[in-house]
Length: 287
Image (cartoon, rainbow, N blue to C red; front, side, top):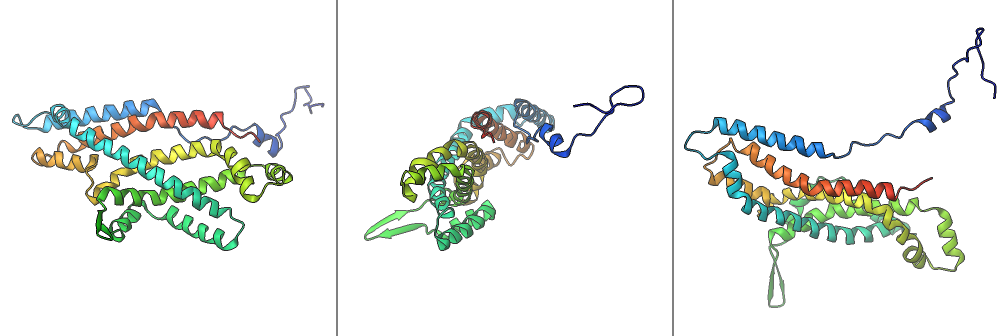
């Protein structure tokens, strides 16, 4: 193809067609969690601790000594946060798969009901759903002559599993929609029923597509488990308030203490975020 030239013989710059320009443009990528973010968080904790030490009286213990003293207790609370995240993610995933199957149901009524439930629980604030779980779930159940207590952590698990359910349902629906129609046609040509098409052909291909967003959702859920403090669960934020009270209500240790806890969440979620990026690259769907 001959390029247009100027009178001096130099090639004339020609704008590429919009389609070609878009094809050459690099796709926008959302900012990723980097290791330097954790280093910056450590620096902020150290600066906050230095400021708190400078403001403390000689009779008060240093911030580092306070953090070291209460670390075993706070670690037990952080472990409870992780346990709540496991239980909520497991329950929410099971319910979300069932709700997601309703979203792709061939029955109009089932599909409409599943859509309403998905939109409601997906867009409702997590804290509001947690309050609903607190007030709607009784403190105990009586089955015959047996009394079954329902502690606060159980209500927190139920409350946090509701938004997880809705998001997993949407993840499943999106994964099923991304499967090429030829897969459905091939399964139908083998005389598979609708259920066999889903469970034997379609859903196994959806697993790798669902895994990265599912892991991202788990990271969000893990950081949201601190909301369980409103139901009196002895998780890390509740114990942090107790530590502040035990130290005489010192307000100077609040920033270093909560920054210290934030650093734990970063250390836990950072490997998940990095592994999610690897999975996204490995399972990228090429069109």
